[in-house]
Amino acid sequence: MSNAIDINDDNFDSEVLESDKPVLIDFWAEWCGPCKVLGPVIDEVSVDYSEKVKFVKLNIDNNPSNTQKYGIRGIPTLLLFKNGEKVDTSVGVLSKSELASFLDKNI
Image (tube, rainbow, N blue to C red; front, side, top):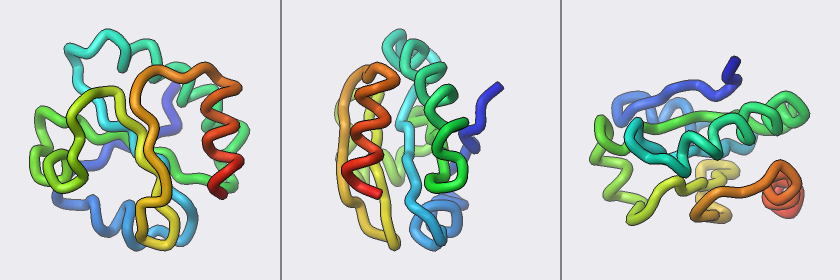
């Protein structure tokens, strides 16, 4: 089961920019093979980090506004926001330990 919340262009600001804790956004698409590999990794890591980080997913096909705004050119792309500001980016599939390290260095 996924701990990541599906968000869209309409609730992006309230779910991400106004969040009281860091937010990891997974920019993904249904047709993306690597996204399907990364999804379960995010779900695993989200269990350990649920108190520290909010995990959300944004389908790029259905939400072009924020996909374009943040210059998403390849997926999967992870953006980490803290206090309403983008603090780091990761493109491509990460292992569980790589994702944990990505979060640890930023939160």
